[in-house]
Image 1 (cartoon, helix red, strand yellow):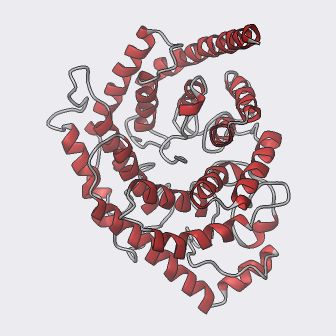
Image 2: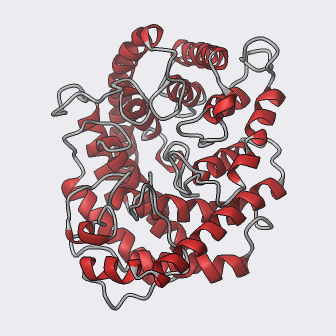
Image 3: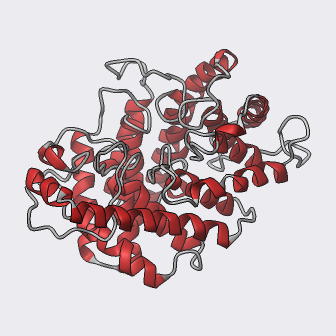
Length: 422
């Protein structure tokens, strides 16, 4: 038996060495392209900050399968990306967007977590690590006004800002609980206002009639983006609700159990009932509720899995785990995506949901499935039907593919970038 375990361990290590070698070859392409990337986009989602965030993740890899030279070069490039981002940052846009995904908050967050070899920030000019943290915190006042027109979703809204604060705390940097509480309060107030509005003007009844869920009672929170009630991780309920669970986990005084159980839990139960027979979720309420098309993190089951698993971990309601497992089967069946191997709407994002399932259940079936997706992703330039708009970015392109390939070598430590389950 011991000999069999050792043989299996050797097979796993051989596979990881093979995957690391393929990852390094792809890494060479990204390294060459970094100098050509435009400074006009410094966002985490499609710009320089996201590429820098990948290099920061690689530089901290503990898998043991990357050489010191690879890790040192990743450190150098992460510092270079910070300097480029901070040279082009524009804080006068904070009033419109403070999301870590798409606003200057992402660049400041990167500056806060990336340090030079001397332990000082890798930022430019007078910007120190503390300065970068202060800039992130200064944006809180814009996210705390619930009726300002700022959306609640992740990519451009308050949830995206909350994730900056969550990530700072996870990096052991100081974040005032009151700042988090005020943003949470704005999200809850916006969501309850949306729920009341949907009830009073008949919108909810119409949405549910179109979706075939006429008997599903309205949840206490309703969130819209550009007039549509999206359900996925990027623009909708999945990203918002998962973030609120994470706030409770890290800042329990900012979102207490009473508020969580009164508003968040009933909304998650409602959300879980929208799962399609296939295991997928529709992209939005209304006519789209009957369409089983997109299996993405941004729209579909991939973004729902971490929410269902986190809800199960917190409340121990078996239905949440069943929903997550059913979604995992849908992702395994349909998660090799035509849009490429990115993490937002690509195959690497599918792999992350499978890694979440492995981490929560310890069922090696999900690790095997994630490994098959990772093998597919090593041929990312061949396994796509169209070129992404930002082919080297974190969420649409090669940086995100590489982020997944680096993390699958240490699967229990793997976390989807910027917005993840515990």
